[in-house]
Length: 342
Image 1 (spheres, helix red, strand yellow):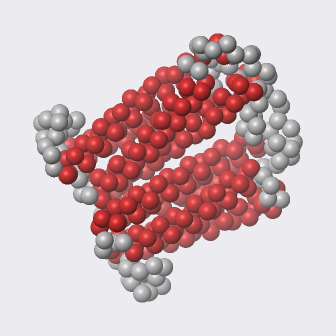
Image 2 (tube, rainbow, N blue to C red):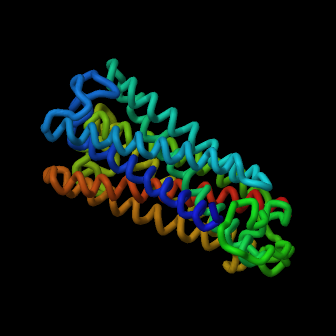
Image 3 (cartoon, rainbow, N blue to C red):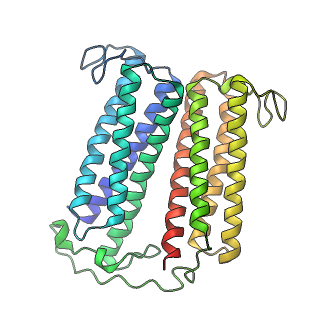
């Protein structure tokens, strides 16, 4: 297998995990979670389910998840066999496999036994972490492939000892030996400047973001979205009565606003320390743009509450944006940590 083939396989595992996330949202929004009764992995005792909308939606979700699990396992095995070994790649591949197993177990438990809404909300969070792991692995595979072909990973320098020879991948093509990766200079790393403590601050934002995501998943699983009518006001009030569904939705909205403010503050910090020309600044701008888009997609959710057919798609959009945002924040933290060590 060539480095390019490995990169493509990592890409497909990332796309597959995104499809698993989307399929899970469709199951929730169409209330198809019991489409196969309490049977698992069969559907009503059959390998091919009955042709009802609920059973087809639920069984499709299971099929996509099963195929993705096999793909993630294959990528994990290939990553473990890469020579020379990369601890970073193994970390991403191992995390992807671990969280894929976790989400499968939670999905099984949700089918065969009564499961609380709180646990179901955790299921989405685990799926999102699994997606982020596959995405980070693909990002690593891209720069690794580039280093193999050119001896230079550009903005992502990696140790020369982690640049494999073409023979280590069993390439059928005759390729020139890779030149040693060029040491990153001060320009490529923006003068090696990583604001002090930046990694810790971004890590705190990631943890907080996960909490906001959990609240959003809890809103969806408890059917609490109708607790706040209107946007940005909630039921025509700045601060409504905080009880029942209204309290849950309002808390999620406040959490989203604070998330935007926290990300904006870190972006300003990085901009001041780097003059706005740093890779860290670019990732920060992307994160800020994504959190803005996430807020707008939240408005779309509220606007389409009474139109169920449209609401399914706006909910999918909301899910895709937050998954990409979470991945971008993780990338931001990783780069802050890597640059701070140079």
